Amino acid sequence: MTSVVPPAATEPTVVHVTVADPRVEPLLRELGEEYAARYGSEARAELARYPSEEFTTPYGGLLLLLLEGGEPVAGGAFRRYDEATAELKRIWTHSAHRRRGLAGRVVAGLESEAGRRGYRRIYLTTGPRQPEARGLYLATGYTPLFDTEADPETIGPLPFEKHLTAEPDTGSGAGPGSVDAAPVADHPGLPQNPLRSQSHQ
Image (cartoon, rainbow, N blue to C red; front, side, top):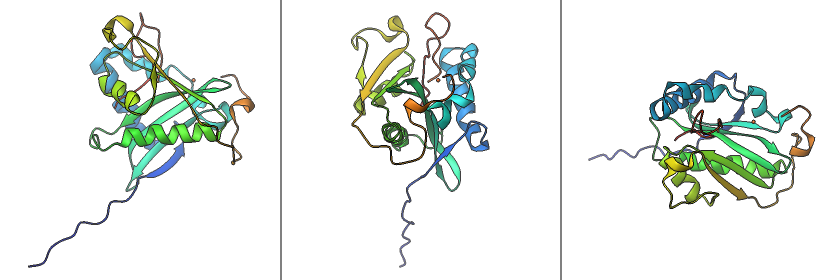
């Protein structure tokens, strides 16, 4: 009897892209669907809240995708919040690839790149109807800046922060101090839209 050994799993490829890259389309589409399902159709506008440029190096931001077989399976972004702080946005895992820990890899990758670029703190908010995202950030060392015992619906956007270990900038990308354009998951104010950042997941 011959046994078939499945091929060894390979790590997803990490790529830095712009919002205009066609591989970003599934991220934007699924996030829009997720927002609409949880908060109503008007929540789709959240994805257009910030100019695409804010997720590029010259503006102090980044958009990151994980690819398998050339196809996006997860992604996320950060934007410049202030000189020391990056704000995570648009954390996403493809609907066919959830429960694999990919969102955690995306967050870790964004944290690493933010630290390399000189940011010392990560800030983010997630919507009150996204318990998976809340659990992700608690599990990955983020400090909740809200009462975790309160009903999330009475709080609105749920803010988190995490302080990064200093990492030297060894690349040529612009750091937070060298942002050369006016300043960026998806953060509307509570009365208009309770999402305030995020994605998910």
